Length: 146
Image 1: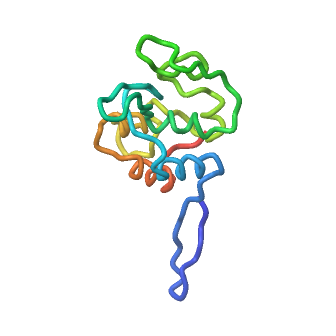
Image 2 (image 1 turned 135 degrees about the vertical axis):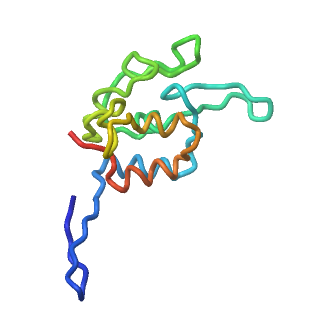
């Protein structure tokens, strides 16, 4: 956290400055260029009106905007899911390290007061959080860092 001073009272406040990889992800989530999906990092579905469309969870978007090198197997499974580093549902370690996040899937994913497991995956796959809202969570510094 970065600390600043509010003038004139001199009250102290904290604000979070996203790292470069997080800022790319925040911008991409808000861009409208990615369609939100659940259950996989990225997968394709056939629609009546639009043909084949690609859906991504928030971490699939992170894979697409990453500057790190890792293997991508386009729609390599029967589920039509893209595999990043050989797995349908796992964020490549290179991307996690670039973001400097502690753990994208476990209980330590988001800052919290109790023992309930909350992660970006939970937020995305609940269907109750848009990409804009997930970007807000990241921008607020609520993701724990390594």
